[in-house]
Picture 1 (cartoon, rainbow, N blue to C red):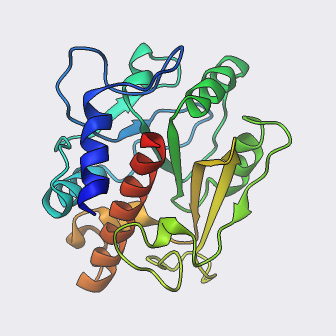
Picture 2: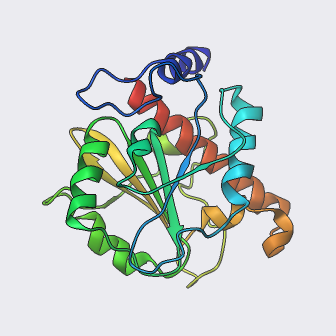
Picture 3: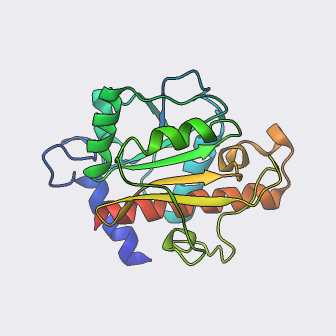
Length: 229
């Protein structure tokens, strides 16, 4: 774990050696954060306002990584997109990417970026439609329970934790792979973002809130370590 943390600190301090790399801008402080993606189509991209701040606080307290206490908010077409190696998107409604957004998102993911899409009950059909347009021919595949994302910091032997009921189906974690790297993680029938929110928001018991935070820490650690390779 110490070696992993050291690698992530190096990552925070210097961008990747790519034509247009994903990573902190030159001369900026070595502080990482998560950027919540503002997408088109009508979905409530801004859902779960207390979720990411709580997750970032957990990452900072439990891993000692230099992370901000506040998330960023970014559109795919914003120049600032390239400063954030970790994108998070959620919502209940429709998702749509324009052709220009698809081209940028394809380049972002190809040069080290990572996207976590978290179905907040209602975005599933549109997200599945849009995500396969990023890399034509690629597809979402369900991850096995022994995948490293479930064991990068905390162990989840049963795979993605079930946080909220939704349709009562088992929670599933899907990955989209490009160049041998998982560039998109899709959490379905779990609703991690709701679990990250202040416990009183949904009345979640402490065990569910903790499980959601732990899985969020795993995702951040896994994504950062993949970028650092």
